[in-house]
Length: 322
Ligand SMILES: Nc1ncnc2c1ncn2[C@@H]1O[C@H](COP(=O)(O)OP(=O)(O)OP(=O)(O)O)[C@@H](O)[C@H]1O
Ligand SMILES: N[C@@H](CCO)C(=O)O
Image 1 (cartoon, rainbow, N blue to C red):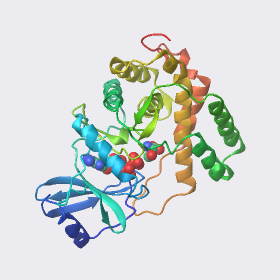
Image 2 (image 1 turned 120 degrees about the vertical axis):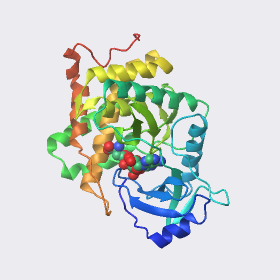
Image 3 (image 1 turned 45 degrees about the horizontal axis):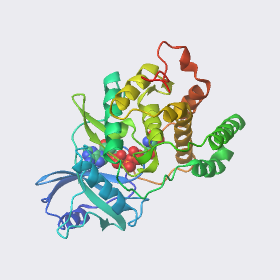
């Protein structure tokens, strides 16, 4: 996140007086992330994170808070929404919907090892399994039609060859839209900066605000593209490690294996476009971060050309064949 909405100490004191979480001792804006405004808040009773939601509405947010509560009940290490004295977990601060969560320990890993990739593969499969029967009425806002809209917004800023590449990929994805693949709750943004580790053990899964109901394999592809590429270069060994760990809890169906290369491309395209959009239309904020769109251009090109297939391990080398 970045700090888009500044809050003052008196506002915070008043806000926390609605809870039974102690008195505010200190607070600071968090610079990571690009969607919401987050502050670390230390009170006389513990450490918390205050989130001011910058785009999700008060109608949508209860679904996300309920999902986080469900995941916590199933022992996933997710932030738990804290309730105020009236049992509300969603309030308003500075004109924005706001909520308080327990602060999870750990730090994100910038350069994941094979072990980190295995850990995240296992956790993602746990997430998919523990939401098998969970009804989550949020659609994927970053689907193919969104990709087309973003291209129409950023197209004028792109080189002719990049526009052509994106057009071509969009045509490919439209012709190969997955049907009949297992669907469920997906995190949809399980990047390295949304996962905390303590001494190599996964201690936190963060930022469920892109979560939606969609193809489970898309979630695996989104996660693998970030965790298993070293600065945009596919690391075939890491892909295999993540997938094998995932499959130890949720084996992929034959149809999913067939679609894996397609969804890797879809996931790379989606984040190339969102990063381009942020680059072309940055939001005003006090502390803002921009992420490099070219990383996902590189990943997409490798998936299209499958250049990594010449390595000893390839990312289609799944444990069982389709
Ligand atoms: N419950 C928590 N415990 C510990 N740290 C947290 C917690 N919630 C948020 N953070 C910290 O704040 C950062 C930003 O949070 P988050 O990823 O939810 O924000 P965002 O703006 O939605 O980010 P993104 O750009 O990934 O969409 C995290 O990377 C993490 O460092
Ligand atoms: N995880 C995204 C940003 C938040 O959606 C990215 O790295 O582009």
